[in-house]
Image: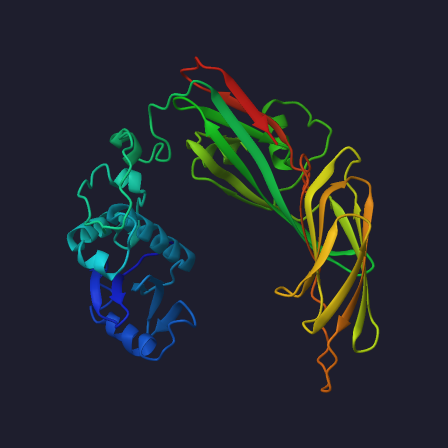
Length: 427
């Protein structure tokens, strides 16, 4: 269920109440005393941001020199509560000129009470968008002399945006050249044995977009996900096209995506925000194409020497290449000296992170590189603890390659007032 907050308190570091608002009558006005006695005075503020005292739960967060405390009397969504706090602080800062501390709260009591009545109703979060709230709460806060001056922005249609129709995009945008940029960025989480067999693997990715479109455009994105392809074939009464399709396990969309249309047609339809934004996040656990294979061999030769051999193979196409490849190989903390031999790139010992850092500027596909290193350790009289051998980390970028196999099949752009040239770049 949502937050359903019974009360919200703003306290200073001494525990004095700066401002508070009761949304429900299921808690008493003295709940803040329980927070002071059982949490603040017992020095347990840094242990856990969620505490249960009696029949109530306290969610609290420190911002600058202010504690924001939400009190609930039922089973509420903790993540939603902290998300509300973060968004509320961002809203206050937009009114106060970037500052949010005890002085800013004392100088803006009336404005804060008015905002608290708008952003939460009977304990349930409402609209927290600064652009929308400033359309009908026009009072300016007392700004700090060090705060930045507000930028003059065109005022959008208040009726359209307050109703929640398109609250993330203002009207009247005009560009001489309409452009859309789309990028798929993925990270591979892999656990591999020393023999090269995959023990656990999953891919988390996101689709980033940058839109400079006039008017109120309507975009439709098609991916090669299995459910979407089957739904499209069903609607068009034709068999599914042969080709690789993937199964998306977890998907999170930007608020601009039409979820009703996605549930019925399994297509991503949206009116994009202006500029750069994150369209969606996803996770895949099946059918992962690994771009690299790392084969390490680490031998402990006595108590003062380690021999490290790491072979990295690229398994993507020969016409492709990886950029900015960084391999981090953990070594013991008592490392004193290292000697390297690499077939490509450069390597060095980084004492701050206890790793051998191997950097390769450009790594072609269907090739392999090796690193050989001798690590000398500081000899100690006392018996040393066994080395846990942390996993090897690898960072890289492979243009035009997705480990999940996700592909953009089409991107349709419909602009009502289409008069300027249009370009679309996918990567």
